[in-house]
Image 1 (spheres, one colour):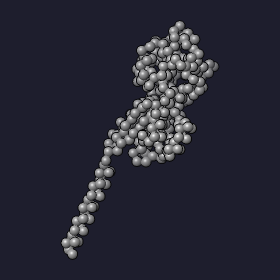
Image 2 (cartoon, helix red, strand yellow):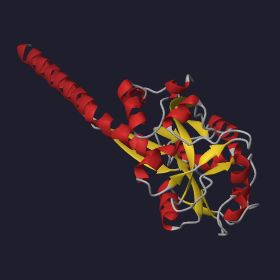
Image 3 (cartoon, one colour):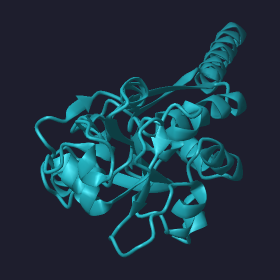
Image 4 (cartoon, helix red, strand yellow):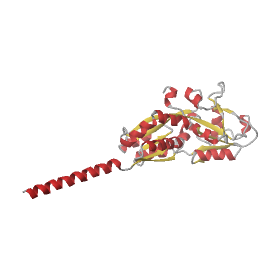
Length: 290
């Protein structure tokens, strides 16, 4: 009988040690967090990820761009934990989400101005919405039509998967089609490089990128109507609402976040996270009162 009791006691002790070991291993196991989406936001999210991993070394964060549409598709297909998007999720995407039993939850984490950029040697300094729309729909093809020299305009745009492409089309072109001659660029960096290399190009990029070009591109002042004053894009004019081409930036999760996803969202909205928003060239959403 004593021997049986001894065996039972040892067996229970072994089971307890195994359970504790499994629990310890699970708690200390490296967690992987995947974030995909907006090319405009990729520097911001990467900066968040770097600071976040310093505070949470047990969580590995992987960040990739590719465009807001790509990120939203990844969220709906279950291949990303968080989607970064520079546009709102569309109705047709929400319908598809419902079919997939995915419930996108939105978190506005910053605001961004879209800068219309040209080469610094281009003498044009300001354009109205109508002039920009005329250039991007193909009605205007020469800089002389907007007060510049007699040179052909080379139009640069992001690809259609980009949230910046969609926002620019809806808010500046008033949903008109882009000119077929527009060169579609896979990333913001490609637009910056092309504008740097070619004096007569025009492109549009997230404001956060402009500061990092160190004067290689020039941001144009923009006015929403010919009777209004042209406004230069900056964190101040975006926050005040004076600059007319601005938008919210958001993170999307599938349902209310939990675990590592929740911790990351909270970090992005924390005081430290919003300081990173400022230092990356964007504007905290609270600065606009929204």
